[in-house]
Image 1 (tube, rainbow, N blue to C red):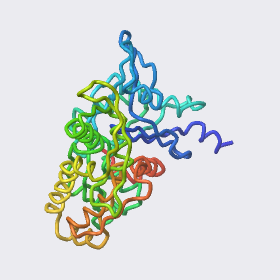
Image 2: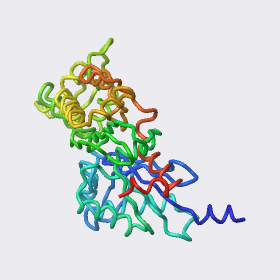
Image 3: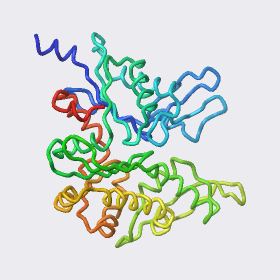
Image 4: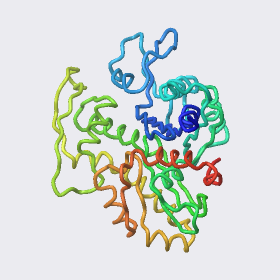
Amino acid sequence: MGFSLSRLLSNDIGIDLGTANTLVYVKGQGIVVNEPSIVALDKHSRKPIAIGTPAKEMLGRENPDIEVVRPLRDGVIADFEVTEEMLRFFIKKVQRNKLLVRPRIVICVPSGVTAVEMRAVRESAERAGAREVYLIKEPMAAAIGIGLPVDEPIGSMVIDIGGGTTEIAVMALSGIVTWRSVKTAGDELNEAIIQFLKRKHSLLVGERSAEQIKCAIGTAGVQDQELQHTCRGLDLVSSIPKTIVVDSSEIREALSEQVDTIIDAVRQTLEQTPPELAADILDRGIIMTGGGALLRGLDRRLVEETSLPVIVAEDPLTCVVRGTGKVLENIGAFQKVLM
């Protein structure tokens, strides 16, 4: 009876509030929500019509009465009210049958978050129904999610490439020693593809199409076999729809500037790393997490540029939210990493 009652009352939640996707971890259940951070609004009443996956289906296909928004940009809240609605929706979704106690929530924030932005995240979560709100930096959560010994006197380096930011951090003794946060990540890569197709093929494609191209044939380095992808868009010359075939060498060219920016940020972080921790990283390697870690050839490029071992984490998209889950399971042990 005690166990079932505690299960009914215990409703602690970990949230990876990402620019591209929001993932929710419920203590004792694991990851229960993995949906796009997108909200469709009625333009007149500003009330949500759809949130998450159904809202993403509407992206680029809206009629004049509907506005599809992404309330988070560059890893931080751009629209507080819509973010709150989205948080409330996801919290309610996982709180069914558990409305006896308001949940404790652990939320991830980028390393470079300001005090104002932290307060905004905290207040949004409280207004959305949280009893207590704890914040944790994304690279730290990712490191915990992978199982790195963040509390030990050993240097661990994580590169977390999300939708809005790339977070690079070296950690030891439950703290972040050196870090870099750059606003070059998934969204910037999509935008680079849109601009490239406009310039080179006079073809206008939407955000969703650009993301599909990136996932299908995006590369950061030369491939043994180049890939091809058929993309459809609007011909900017004739203003009628057309179909073209692009190959991975073109998309590599489109993404080269953004990839170089990420590599430069990694180099700068390494330059600022104390020698003892740098020696640990030489032994243990750099771990890549986040959706951007799946970009073909990026790990090889980093090995070439840094001469360090680079490992792509298992299931890189969920590392951060898995980290919040581990924190929830033993909040006392991780007190030092919480903000």
